[in-house]
Length: 247
Image (cartoon, one colour):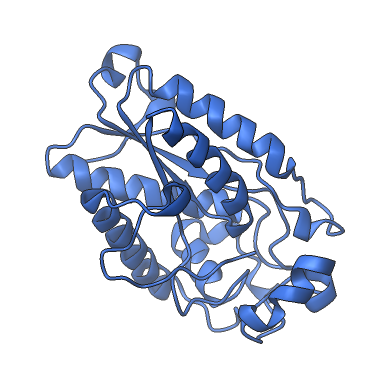
């Protein structure tokens, strides 16, 4: 059963929705080969897959339009990057969820951009203090490279191959993101990866991307079903695995 896309639905069709999934993206550089809107594209696909799975099980789930602009300050200096910062994003999320929970009892925010996490945490902490049923998760998986590498490139090849400039794909900085994190946070992505890539996208395939997307959707479905929430509203993983931050 296809996902109910809120922007395409009528008010009557949205009535009775028990869970609203909100994909969050960013408009930021993704190396020389991926589109600026990569994070929103992946988050939207993940939400669509989760909603379709849950609707097949009889759940009334809808997917909101993508919140396209995010907090991408670490990518400033690359042409095309547009960031609204953490505080503005926090305000957007607070007002969005306050409005949505007037007609839908539960909201889950799904971010394709790890840089949105501080705003997500702050917004959900406040909203949960207001007794609103809201939580968040990301599209990051342990073991995936951090940014514009094999994982993201493969997923975009599966979703929108025409948007991938395959001939321009090249390795970037392949050190673990945990090693790069202090300098990345203080000086930005350009300081550690002049081409904007954290990983190696050159072996990416659409087939691998579909496999990764399936893993992502199944994990978020398990999180939603469990409903276990940790600090600042993060949805806990039933398997106990951590989430790697992605720039």
